Length: 470
Image 1 (cartoon, rainbow, N blue to C red):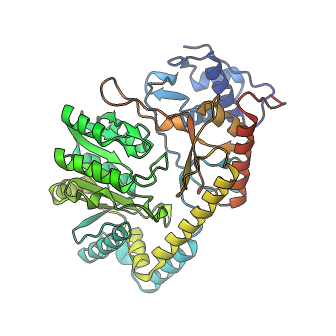
Image 2: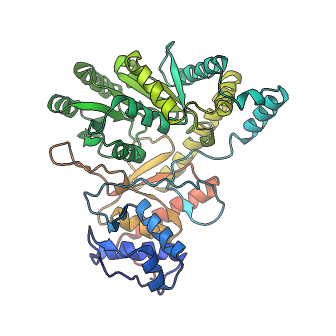
Image 3: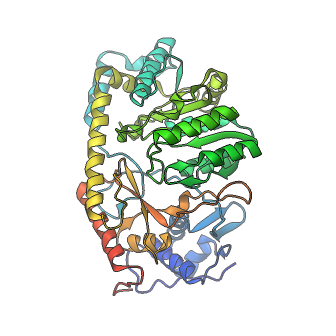
């Protein structure tokens, strides 16, 4: 165990962030090395004269920033380059008007659906329909919700008359797809930088992960072909439009090349398309090219209201029964009241209006970010709710996150999205010296502008600059 007691004298801000700041500095300076075990949070609290809640919160924030990892029954350790990232969801996603400016959480703008939700609930109450929605869904409910799902999926470019299924958001849909397609020790192919919950799902399902070589247009078809020839692949997970975290959108030609490889090998693709509506010029989903081998997942959470937790899954008939069983096993059904609200909004046009409002707001915030950070962002147009900022020479993601947090701005550390690739299983993650900037979580555009301005000032000053009070 490393004998580590941080020096907090002279630091500013909440004590838990002071501990995270000192931890980052110790790791950067080499005083703490990958694999070093940290003191238990209660012991550290005693040494510093603080409450255990404060040190526990500090360790939790350090996990979120991919600085450390916790192992049940063993302790807390400094992460190394090959340490698996630990996804730790924060249940408290309230949007606050003060405190740190949070550019780390990839959520749509809040508040846009409130008035519509009030009207819909009042109408449902006046019609006497709420009592029925407190019970199990009927066949009529199911038919109505499936019609809404087909309408939403059609907006994404995938026309279908087949059965689609509702889930508790896209994340639940992805988990059910993995459950339907894989068995323990199965191989899941992903990109080297991947949506964090998928990494956690794979770990909890006992799956092996292998990474696909990527270029500027996304996964390379040649490497997908190689892995499908050399190994028994259970499933492939891709986000072709506005990828998390890179924000990249694959070209139509790349999608066609990947679909050809998938078809040739009889592979199964899970296509995550939750951000598609934010990219008006997007190519058609891969599912349109190889529908018999693709489970297509989307949701309303990123475009309408995240609290509704309604996702939609379209699957080929060959796996539909297994997918339906996985949904029934995990939640039995999407809550009828939320599914009914969404179906109402699809029918009366509210869904289109809310989606248009979210898309317009995202365009404005992308333009704001482009204006402020133009010297540090690529010239290519950006869309959606987030940006991927590759840091200039001399910076590390840890250092940038620490400096930004010190100035009251929270960012997502690029290393948290990296998939460790065992030797021979794919291409190791690269490009992790970056941060993801999420533009939708903050309700007030002025706070977003302030956060981006602070980030620009840090980049302009360079990694060598030390603020006077430190």
